[in-house]
Structure formats: structure tokens, C-alpha cells
Image (cartoon, rainbow, N blue to C red; front, top):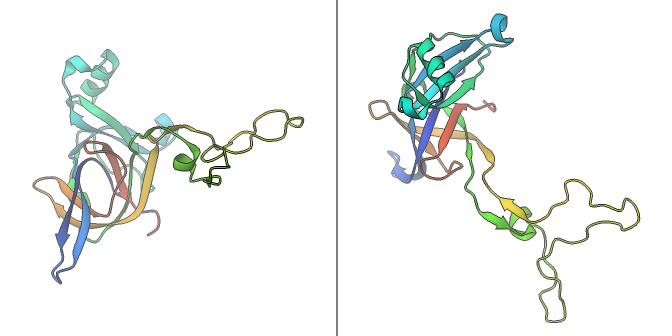
Length: 209
């Protein structure tokens, strides 16, 4: 069965197994999320479940958003995401999905927006090699050749150049669920996940299972 939920990254810590082995974990506030819309092949061309996460005041919603949530009979949500399930839609509008959808021992893929690192050169941004660092060289951390001058007389697409680094969607696959606290809606996932503290995360079954 496919499972998915939205969460908020709270930070990292470590826990101990019964054997005394320390495991670094990321603490994720997973849900609860509310089903706000069911999409079907007949109406939308595909099957999907739309869920909302984090309550928000009506004054922060647009008129179309207010109508959308009113039609579903749920309170306004800050984040809306869709999940497609191969088994078809098995949820009802207004239903809640909580952290207990996952259990200890499950493997998940976690998607988030990576931390922004500002303007970065090619060495930091793309991992390119630097030039000689001796005093005679005037070429240390620059991007390298821009290409031929006569043909094609332009910089080719996808040339690795300096620019804004980070703030990109990143997915870390095949992470172990170490513990699940249903009462607090907390999931502990082994290892690190993308994004800053408080960042939105999408947690789904791993595709590598």
C-alpha cells in the first residue's frame, strides 16, 4: 500500500537502540493532514488525493482558496499538495492522515527545499577543479573555458557557471523510520533530510523497496 504525508522539519538529534548503538535522526512533525479534494480520472484525467497541512487564518487566504476549503468543509490550510496512488482513491474528503500511517521499520523518501547558500562560484557550486595556486598563476577558482570563439561563437547551454546555489527541490531516498510517536505526530527518520528547521517536507513510501 502506498502511503504519504506532509511534515515539518524540527531538527536533528540522536537515539539509542536496545543494543546501545547510537543513531542520528531527523525529527519530523508529520501531519495531521486533511484531505481537501479527491481527483478522479473522469473529472480530472487522473486519480489523486489533495491534502492540506497547517491551519491558517481566513484573512490570509484568497477568495478562491476560501471557496475551495468551504466546499470541502475543512478549515483553511497553508500548504496544499497532491499524492497519486496506484490503488486508486481510498480516502474521503475531510479525513485526517496522521503519523501512524507509517510504522517503525518502514523505508521512506523525503523531499524538501534545500537551504539557500547565496551566490557561489563554480568550485563550491559544481565541484569543479581549481587552477594552480602558485604565485605565477593568475587562474585559481575561475569557471574555465567558455568555448570556441568562431564556432559556435556562443556559450553552450548547461555550462557550469557561478550563480545562486541552493533553494532547490531535493529528495533523499530509502531512509529508515526509526520511531513513530502517534500522540505527538512525530516521526524519527534515520539520517539527514533537506531544508532548514521549520521547512516543509513530503514523506512517501520509498520507490526502491
